Image (cartoon, rainbow, N blue to C red; front, top):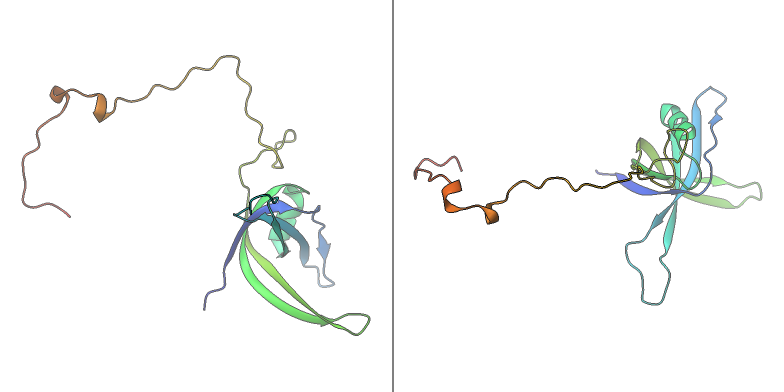
Length: 153
């Protein structure tokens, strides 16, 4: 069986670190994941996905991520049910985190990660030197290779 979810989205609220009665760290939050398509004349839609992280993953997320930050998550999709205080049955589908990653967006201050990537300011720009391509080479730039019947592929 295979049950893997890989998601990248923005946190909808600051994650809050909680501790179970046995001392295990846990956090639950949701992320907004944009859909790939947009119907003509409509705004882009997003799906809001519930996420749960335990132990070191929970502590890591609460330390380095905040509302609006882009996050990449890998985990397993799980469903559970419980009975609410009013007696009704509730069903929850959530992703339980196995791995979490930064997405490359840097915070403006404090060296962490957040919503916007700040490009370094430069006063002058010099384009990198492009290596010569085969299209700009002369026939004398190339070497004749001997024909060999024992090709490795």
